[in-house]
Length: 389
Image (cartoon, rainbow, N blue to C red):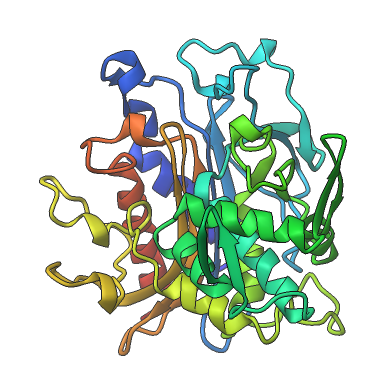
């Protein structure tokens, strides 16, 4: 398996799903017509061989897909100018409204240069992965601890409990509590409404992850559109989301884009971060193990639910998927570490962001179209064949 082979396989997997045919609730159930924005990255770790990785991107401007130009050291994407997602003064995600004219939107640069542009969709609750890492970094510095009591809106709980609920059930209250905690610890500062300090950005940039942005949050815990953050301010490209996971994966080879002397991203705090990701309840995007009771269920990446969430549900799959999802009306995202359960041995990372949220779901109990788990299953099947496990 070579990098070009993987890139071509990802292109074909996305094209096969015909995402432009997704039914759009804002169009009364008619097909969306224009190709949605999909940013998809995979890094496979074949036993005894060098990592193989690729990133492909689709949009209305690139319906056949682009292959990101990534050097052999897995550094930053070199051929694409990423634009931040956009919202208007009413807080609407204007890029995805029916009939939106992209030529009239005042796009802000996010990162990168190149002949092609790509609008990076809002990552929705996948952004909580950045916050989880930020809190863990404070703990490694001795400025917090997982056991430290944190009081928010009259509820006092340990920091680690807030982090667990933020990750496993995507609790927004827990997210706000931890945003407030970052501000209280001085990791993020605002003066006169302007952000003047953001240690998360400094941390991510030190590890070469300029596509990760956690901007404009508030000292009271505000992090959504209404707080002046949200769409266009919380940003995660798929490739940099994947490389963040690479740095968190204890079984992954050393990150080739960093010097050997670069310290680990997280130290003593890493175990709790991995615990939170491994206990994910919401298998609803690339994996669909949480949705087996829905008529018309489509199998996704074959991941088992953690035992605490599996009661009464039929267990399927031969993989563990330590991941974080994100979903809103307009967006779906998923990124995580995939490892085979014996005798399966495959090991890879996968990250996806898209503007395929609840308005495109085939069933109101789902959070995205069935085409997304079908995409996950197709990618896993290809990797299983290639990696012989």
